[in-house]
Each structure stands twice: as C-alpha cells, then as structure tokens.
Length: 327
Image (cartoon, rainbow, N blue to C red; front, top):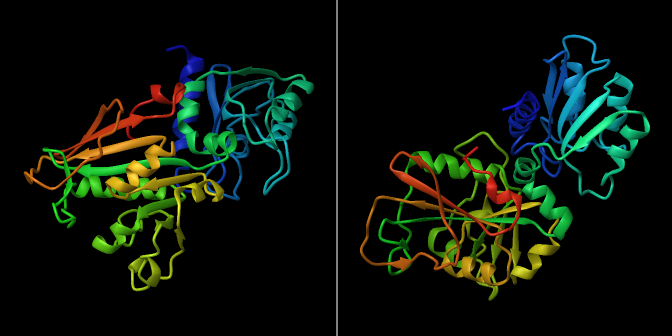
C-alpha cells in the first residue's frame, strides 16, 4: 500500500476514536506528514471541542510549514463552536491537503476546498472516499436525505426464531455481544423500539455496559398503548413516543438504532427507512417461536463474538457497502 493510502487510513483510524462523542458533528481524523514522516495527528474528540486539524497542528513535533495534511473530511470554512479549520491550515503553512470526502453540510459543501485553493494550497479529493462514506454514513445520510440513518439490530436462534411463541423474550446473545450492542447504542443518537417490546420486555435501552452517552429512546406506538409505568418513562431519561414511522424524518437525529421486534422491522423496511441491518445468531435452538423477519437482503458474515455469529446487510447502495469489520 503506497504511503498516501497508509496515512489516510491512519486518519480514519483516529477518526473512529471519536465514535459516540462527536454527534451531530462528523467523525474526522487528520494526519500531517513532512519529509515522509508523520509529524502531527489528531481527531475530533468531542462535540464542541477542537476539530481534528486543530489537534493535529497542536500536536506537531516540528513546524508544519510545507507539510501535507491528510483529512478524512473537507475542512470546515465557517465559524461554529470553533474557528474554520481551513483558515488554520492556511495559516500553518500546509502546502498540500488530501481529503477523502467533501462535506455535504450546506455550511461547508465545497467552500473549505475553495478557501484552501484560493490560498494556493493543492487539494486532492477522493483518497479513501469509500471508507470515508462508511465512516460518516450517519452524517452523510442526514444531510443528503434529510432523515436519520437507521440501523436495525436483532438476535435470533440457530433455528431462526427471535422470541418464544407467546412473545416472551428469550436471552439469546452472549455477554460479549451484549457489550457490543451497548456500544452500538452509544454510537447512535436515538434508539427505537415498538410498543410491543415495551409491553413484553420493559427494557431500559441504556448504555449501562459501556462508557457512553445514552441515546434518546423512541417508542413507535400507533395505537397509544405506551404505559406510564414503563422504565423508559420513569428513569428520568429522554423518551419520545411516535404514532407513525413517518415522524422519524422530522427528528433532528442523525442516527437511530432499532431494537424492535419483527413487526417494527417490517414496517420500517416497507417504508424504505432501513439502511443497515445486523443479525446476531446464537447457537441456541428453541424449536418454535416467533420467526425472524424474512427480508430480501444479502447477508455477510462479519465476526464471531464468543459463540455468537454477527451478520450484516447494507441496504443503502453505493460505496458504503464495501467497508467491512466491527469497529
């Protein structure tokens, strides 16, 4: 792999360290190279904090004058909670910038590159673009399609059931998978279940197994059956109750993890509101029960956590489908 690809991959690896802490901002990493050596690197660590470029310049071991920057997303060109990163790169003396993806946010959307080029900085766009699309799929979907990126997750038995025949929940995934699920919750701004899940399981839908912020709980309740005694109504966390899936588009959330049952999944799938699906297959068998959703998707076996097998299907076409691996 040529050095340019290696340095951009390092920027992606850094960007991932901000997962669950920077939304609604995107995940961004930056690597600064001079004389074929990395002299500075950084990533966006938390919402409201310094951006990746700021941290990379601040951490540089020598002057960045004449250096090349590798950034996973177009440097911002506007004043928000922090000053424009494009201005910082110009002032620091960087001469070349490699950018994986342009920023679809209308406040940026090419303006960062224009500012860099106007200052005489050479910009190369598209290095690692496919990986960048996957990395910031939540952010890109929200700004391009004006709706949250929706990920569905469910566990099933080896013989294809998600619950007992009477709807009673069955503990399927193991402890390692449970921790990973809680990490997924922390990486999403919202978590959605159908009201039937509340009635039968009364979940808290928190990130108690990992260090991460709790997502906003969303209950899809078309017929108004949500009980006031439910945990999500009593524990002091934020909970929204929606009557229809169409209301999801109006929420100012970039990402929602769905942990509802088969009916919720099928409703969202029919409405074209599912972008990504994760299936956790347990080695357990129960011989009868509620079958897993029958969906026309192509599963890819991704990983093993203990005796659980994780599968993924990406419904959104395009470069996002080429990136793999649990991160």
